Length: 504
Ligand code: AMP
Image 1 (tube, rainbow, N blue to C red):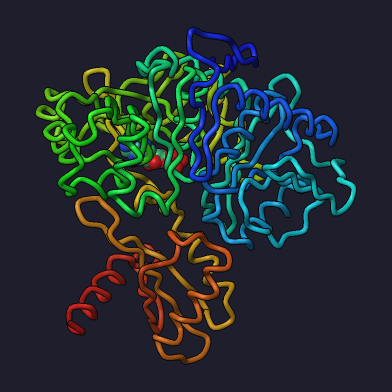
Image 2 (image 1 turned 90 degrees about the horizontal axis):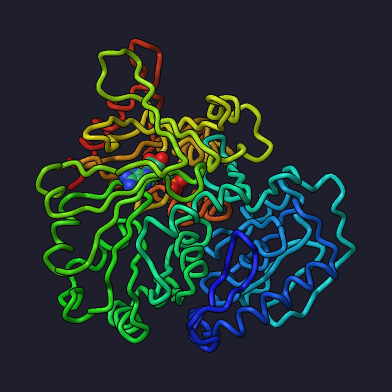
């Protein structure tokens, strides 16, 4: 069996209905059960009268019910917001406040302390606190319904909701089904948190091909031997991750094709893919393909793709991000015609309709190009031999361990603390890779550094996910300014590194 997203139905194939569809970190279900349970959840949506365009929160972390709930939403034109357990409760409350969401599908065993009208649990029990009010909480338009809103880091201090419509998902799938080279025999590893669309890539591919999806929780992944045994046991053939994630395993003596022979494809996305990582994998997984895919959440999962062959590894120290998908255009907006690189602009139907209720940012980042939606990515790129190469960013957005972080969001949240007068956050990099995030703060009243760090950590953990908590906090009397009246970040870093050196 497989799921046909164009026709919105489960279709019979030569594969048996009792073939595994989803292996969760809790339990596993076959395709027959996936169909029955998906239809049952859709029935509950109808009974609850959830209108298309009203966002339903799906909460959990790698339970089998999470991708099932996503499929039920797609099947029934229900908008959803995926929220992984890594988000603190205050951040979830903020998202509910922003969107007015009335319904929560709780895939986990966590009893969330939030005020919401209706909670649907994974055993289909319904907890109703009060009658849901959908009035003024229906978004998008009916000709191309809003399928999901994915919240990413936002520079203003609040998460930013990227809105993706149904036609954008079909645009992704119609490309992935033909160009990624997967089949119904594939078993897809899913480990990225559901709050990132890296995780949606393998969910959609697995359902659309009629494959098997193997979800691996953070707990499972932490134990490398147990994780490898899981890959071996379920014969995982497609490894989808950020390069940072695979990096955790490269040095392990059992991470190779002799021990895990089922892996046939490494599909990387979400951040720069280092040449040396590919060289290593080519030596240890001799027959596996390596694919590099690029794209921001705002353009539905990924937009460009290339197979990284030995020839490419040898020829390009900076690896290409590849060729745009057929219904997409990549423009390079150069400041001057003689420049080699410029800002990468993505044009096509897969581009988001904009950030949720955020007109200022929408005006800044989105526009219409030749009748199609266009997104200014902030990435700096150039074309060579018809392939696109990405060299960095023109703003303060960084990736650390594959997580997307707006440094200004961290500073803005820090400034909400009573002790802080001002804050600026900087990413310390080596070889273009973020090694540490440091927030520099000016205080309103004196406090010891250790005590400040303790208090600020407790404060930040309430609203920011763990990966956005700065690695260090440095107290300064005032910020240095450059001649152009901007905070002199280079001087801040130099002074910080000198202090570190003197302390060691
Ligand atoms: P996200 O929205 O979390 O997927 O982050 C998108 C950003 O990650 C892009 O705008 C790039 O800065 C970076 N990115 C994603 N994929 C790649 C890639 N293959 N190579 C280099 N940078 C990438």
